[in-house]
Length: 412
Image 1 (cartoon, rainbow, N blue to C red):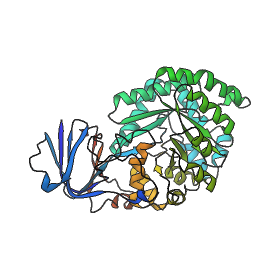
Image 2 (image 1 turned 180 degrees about the horizontal axis):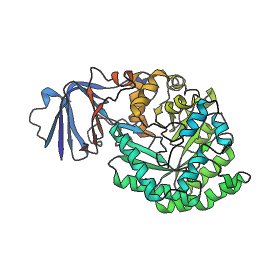
Image 3 (image 1 turned 135 degrees about the vertical axis):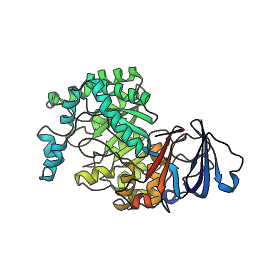
Image 4 (image 1 turned 90 degrees about the horizontal axis):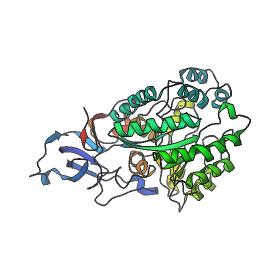
């Protein structure tokens, strides 16, 4: 299968040599070719260039992209899209003044989702999740991390991993599974948290590793959930099974989780709505990617990640949707790119870098995804007619996507 896209108004995120991360001031650089073409064979980007050099290239499918922008598909490095039901009632509770902590104390939040998921069959859970995944792909997401964490029992967490594996097999999108058993403390363990941590370490992590589905372990390091000592114990247990850390950290409080993540070579530290100078220093000279989740801040009215503080310190930054039923029930990365510009004060160039190359890095796949580079996988967005890529975040409530190519296949 070969595809030739011609007359591209702007071919965005073009790199002759493979880029796997953008940091600091380089995040404001976004290489663009005007009046360009892109040539794909099977699932791979083979060639690109300006239209006057396109003569002699033949393809089975030719797409005329006159007046349109072409860029790599979004890489969403933080989602929880495998869940059952919804939490609409909590949305109304929040409008009526209840906080995240209030809702959690009355049995809502993660525990609410866990109860529903435990009662849902694997087949039903798969069907609900596949529908969401297909919606994300249609909005331009070509690679997505999916976390567990709504099981909170050994059986239910493993069920989630099996569903994620089925999604990976069913979908053209690239899916990165992550074990997040330490997402909350189950009701049965409220007064014996250490017993639940022991269950995760001694039973759940070994059984999850035996399935050979995930290569990452995550922890919600936060007051009332898992403290620094708990988090380190779980990360250490995961490392024995070659599970690399990724941490939910600094959403509401600063506990030292970023330093801990760097110490354990976490691939990413995610949320960061609260961050201080000590955290910034910890991230310097590390291989850990900070990840901002502006959709969560928008939905539950908490502070936004200080993107300018992070980028201006010379660090990289990725953005992701945090798609989940309670605090960010949307996986629309076009909106996330817009929110990064409007609320995180990022330039369009920084936001697109954060949602492509750096998002791919936060999943460990930026050697093959996240840019228009010869030899990389052909995950491509073709926009509706527009004059400049800045219109994607500018028109925040509009769908900019006209066509999507995932692993070299043009989706209908």
